[in-house]
Structure formats: C-alpha cells, structure tokens
Length: 160
Image (tube, rainbow, N blue to C red; front, top):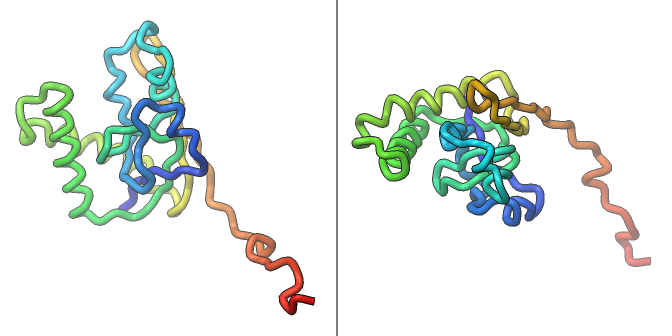
C-alpha cells in the first residue's frame, strides 16, 4: 500500500504557507479544509494553501510537493485516528469514533491516488473554486533515473 510524504527541495514552503508541513510527514489532499470557502477567503498565505498545498497529517501544515512511498496498514490506521482527532479539534466532530469513518475515507482516497505510482513519484495539487465547490487536479512527476554525472567526482584526486 502507498501514501505520500511531504518533501521539500528548498525553503519556499517556509515562506509561502502560514503553517508549513514538516519534511517526511504523511500527507493527503486536505481539500476538506476549503469546503466552505469563498473567493473572499482566498488572500495571502491562505490563498497559497488553497491553490496548491497538501495537508500534513501531523502538523496540519501545508506543503507543495509530496512523494509516493510505501506504508503499512497499521500505520495507516494510526493516521486515521490522528485525522479523526483533527476533525474533533478543528471541525466540531462529536468524538474520534464518529470521525473515524470520514478520516478513513480521506486516507483511502489518497491511497487510491498513490497506488498506481512508483515510490518516489512526486505529486502536486492545484485547486480552484467552482460553482459546484472545490475542484482538485493532480500533476504526476515520475522519478528520474540518476545519471552517472550526478555522482562523478571532478578534479585531481592526487593533489597534483
């Protein structure tokens, strides 16, 4: 089974998101955060989170890129409980047990998105508000074969 983890190539997420996700934390789309948003909500860093931020399950932060990786069923169930607790804390779910089915469904959607991709495949998300609600589109960046020149040592090893 596969899910995605936050990955950073530079420090830009630290500047563009009010709450950046940590490198390596498990992520999902997190479009639920924007279900009641209007154009008026899309300003500043909130606009950036809406436009292309994945949701970090540990911090509730956002990240631009995620990488597909393997996950064990037990770990996925722990994440379901973590997300269910987030729904209780921030969205008014009555308790974790009531929120668990929704949390599991959110995670199942992300597992489905990741399942056909090789490990280390990068994903991005792009969102827009429509009359029907939030529309999400995903971009897939396949892992590239590393070229020998990336590992070559240039220079004189003898010091001459």
